[in-house]
Length: 277
Length: 168
Image (cartoon, rainbow over all chains, first blue to last red; front, side, top):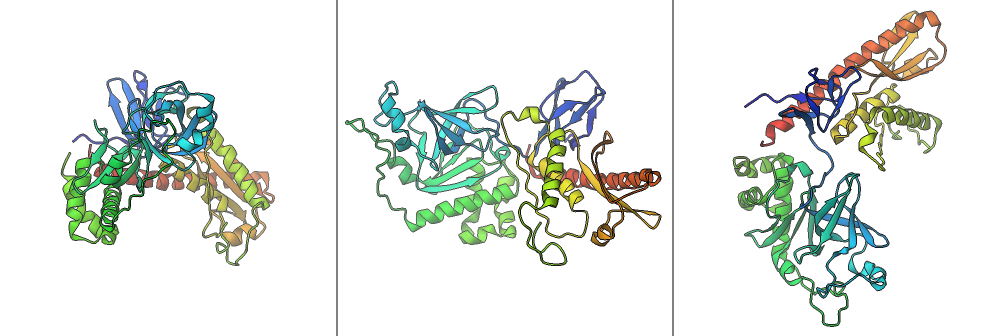
């Protein structure tokens, strides 16, 4: 294994002027390439960049994110996705209830708060990245939309592995959405299947009507156990994806849910996940 | 400052002069060190609470804020390290405690960018003869290089420990 070049801000990476400057570096006054963050130096051909240990989520087109609505503006919502700037969800980027395709009218604008209001959690996909780095999201698919009756846990975005699919139905009966931005949503599988946006012939927004689904004690326990498993993986700085979560969950069956927060237990249950990947 | 931080329990009002002065100094300092071009239209908040105080509050706030910014992954031009120095009874002193600060002698706070030796903050209370200034400044600079060595080592050790457990 090659030795890792670890740097702190102000450290000179190289005095060779032939390299291009990537993220986390800058040119000092005398032409040297200096690190601006603390992390590992990555060299790809002639490009040098420094990857910091943790930073805010920098989105890319096609990423699946879980976000929280923080503001309702004129024709769009502002969403918190743990990025440097708040992400934007345009009114034209959501699926209207009833599955209709039509131009958004003034009435839709006035009804925005009935679709999503401040504090709601949504799953969405990144449609576009603006020049200042902020993201434009869309929920133009039935699998995206408002998230209900579950548990959110936030992890550092660097620990989330890039996968083809971010919506996982775990074998234990819960469903997990691992957002690329580090927001992970755990909910019961039955709720997810039944709580899709319903087709309403009268074309009225139906998202306000909540089906009265009771979550049983076992489901709550599964959700809590999954949450603690993810917490253990984060504490051990292991990448988060469906297989690692599943292995950790299986290893945790011997313990009570609250015991999973103990250091030694966390160490033990994350052992099988360490050896994969 | 926390109420229990000094030797006598004292409730501080929000806008007391010393905190406001320190906040302003910190703000000006970090405005020049943080690479703000990478954060258009954004605000970075730095919150500092002193839990135990025995002199050197300003210096420790600066050092702590630097570490916090590095931990957050915010790009900086360099570390900002600070140290205090004084001059009592013909002896330059390094890193004054509370008694030495309030004794009435000169109290110099110096903050540097260690790699380029650029000064970002110089503050002094009381009076100091110009002849002694260089001696006291050099004492402070020695202190700063020691602080920088410790901060740098801690950052690298933390990196080593964390990177070691991240797979690929």
